[in-house]
Amino acid sequence: MYTLPSKLKLFSIILIVLGLVGITYGFLTTPKTIEDVKKIMAEQEGHNGEGHAVADEEHTANFVDVARGEEGYSEAAMEHATDLKPEGHGATSHEEHVLHQLQTRPWSATFVAAFFFMMIALGVLVFYAIQYASQAGWSPGLYRIMEGITSYLLPGSIIVFLIVVFAGTHFFPWQNEELVAEDKILQVKSGYLNFPFFVIRAVIYLLGWNLYRYFSRKNSLAQAEANNYNSYRKNFKISVLFLIFFIVTEATMSWDWFMSMTPHWYSTLFAWYIFASMFVSAITVLALTTIHLKSRGLIPFVSDKHLHDLAKYMFAFSIFWTYLWFSQFMLIWYANIPEEVTYFIIRIQEYKLLFFGMLILNFVFPILVLMNSDYKRVPWFVVIAAVFILVGHYIDIFLLVMPSTVGHNWHFGIPEIAALLFFMGLFIFIVGRGLGKVSLMPKNDPFIKESENHHF
Image 1 (cartoon, rainbow, N blue to C red):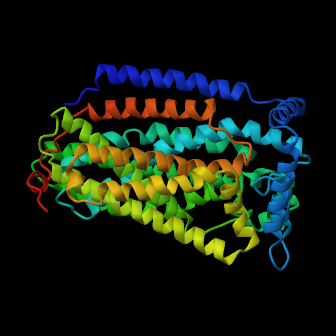
Image 2: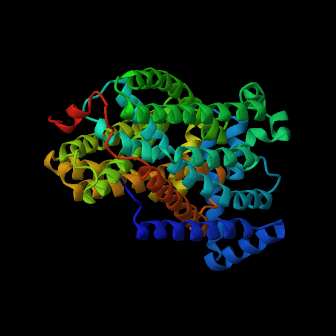
Image 3: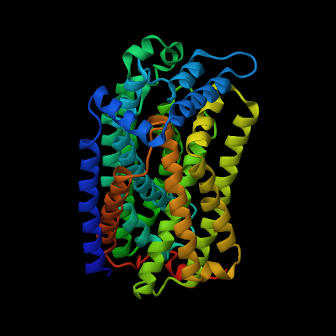
C-alpha cells in the first residue's frame, strides 16, 4: 500500500501555504480606485518613456483596422477594438477599464490554475470510464492509480465552481445587466446566458462527474471482495452512461466557463479543443504517477509495456490537440470575419511568445521525444515529454482566460505563481492520500491477468 513520502507531504504543505499567502496578497494589492490606476499608469509611462503613448495609439489603431475589415464593421467588434478589451466589458473610460482588468487579474490567475488541475482529475476519470466501457484488457493494473488521481475531482471541482459563480462580471460580461440592455446579440443569447441557468448547469456538471466517480470507485472496491463479476458489470453500465453525459456536459461547460468570457465570439471546435487539452494532460499525469509508483516498487504488475501505451496516448493526443488548434486558427484567420478574428488578434499581438511558444511545447517537443517506440518505454524520456506537455497546456488554459479577462494588462507574477503553487500542492496532497487508502492491485477484476501479461 502506498504512503505519501514525508518529504513529499511536507513539500505539498509548503506549496499550499506559500500559494495561499500569494493568492491573498494578489487580491489585497489590486488597485481600489481610479486614482490608484492613474498612479500605476504614470509610473509605467515614466519607465517606458514618451514612446508608451505612441505605442498605445498604434495598438488601438491595429485593433480598429482589423475590426473594420474590408466591407465594414460591427459595433461589437469596433467597441472591442477601441476599448482595448474583450468585447462586452463596457467601461466608460480607459482608466475604469484598466481598473476592472487589474482587479480581475487575481481572479483569472486563480481560475487558470484551479481549472488546470481539476481538468487533469476529470480527464483521468474519463479515461477510466473509457477503459470500463471498452472492456480493455491492458489497463486494469492502472485502475487504482486512476482512482487515486480522481480523488482530487471533488475538492477541485468545488473550488472551480465557487470561482465561476462568484467571479461575476470579472469573467462574464453577459452578467452586466446594463450591457445586456444595450446589446442585441446578448439579448438573443440571454435565454442560455443568464445567471440562474448558468448556476444550475454548473451544479449538474459537478453532481454528474462526482457521482460517477463515487459509484465507480465503490463498485471497484466491492469487486475486490466479491466472488462474482456483478460489481464490474455495474461499472460497465454506469461508465457508458457517464461517457454520454460527459460528451454533453463537457461541451456546455466549455461554452459556459470559457467561450462566454467573449460572448460575441464562438467556435464549433471549441469544446473538442478543450477536451484535447484536458485528455492529454490527464494521461500525462497518469504516466508520471505510474513512473513514481513503479520507482518505489509498489506496482510490480505494471510493466514498461503499460508505460509504452500511456506514452502512445500522450503522443497521439498531442497530435490531435495540434490538429484542432490549427483547424480552429486557420479557418477563422483565413475567413477574416471581424467578429471572429478579434479573438486571435489580441492573443497574437499581446501574447505572441506564449501563443506560438505553446505550439513548440505541445507539439514539437512531444513529437521529437516520443517518436521512437523504444523511448516510450524509458521513464526519463517520458518524464521529459511530460514536463513539456504540462507546461504547454497550462499556457493553453492561461491563453483561454487571460486575454478575455485582463487583455493587455497581464503579467506573470505573484498571483499566477502563487495560484500554481497552491493548487499543485493541494493536488499532490490529495492524490497522495487517495493512492494510499487501498491496495494498488485491483483484485478479482476479470481482466487483471490479461493486464499482468500485457503484450503488444
